[in-house]
Length: 176
Image (cartoon, rainbow, N blue to C red; front, side, top):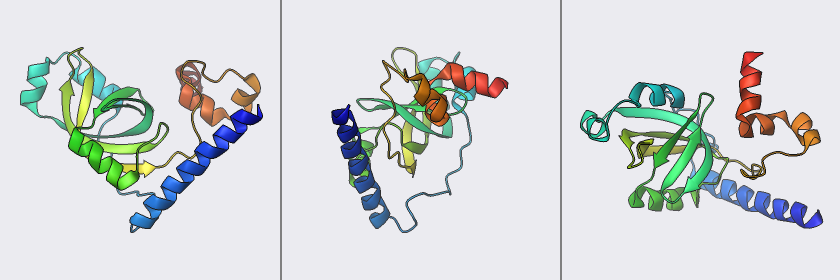
């Protein structure tokens, strides 16, 4: 158990160092509030699910979304907002820019993304990032995706973590 706490403390210290570096670079306080979201993930999924890959490319629909990074798979980031999830694609140039500006983005960070809608080869909707902005740096790691939040005591004491990680809890919360 002590090893787990020391690992968590090291991770938090690394993330705090990243935040300090961001604040040193940034003219404001490191938590911008000028980003304007124009769409929610679920609205995009429902509105553009029927469009073919070629149709979306010719349409060139530009969207602006914001969400928490729930997973990173190569150049793809899985963003979750209050309505659902959508992927964001970072080209090699964008990835280099992210590294230069922020060190790297961590799971749990909240970012704003502006770009054109596309579909992957598997038919998943994604936003090709033209512009992005780190809105909030996550200092504490989220629970593992596979195991989730298993401790009932933690679920009760840290409801915010349970709401982030569990879609069922989030749905119940909105229903009430």
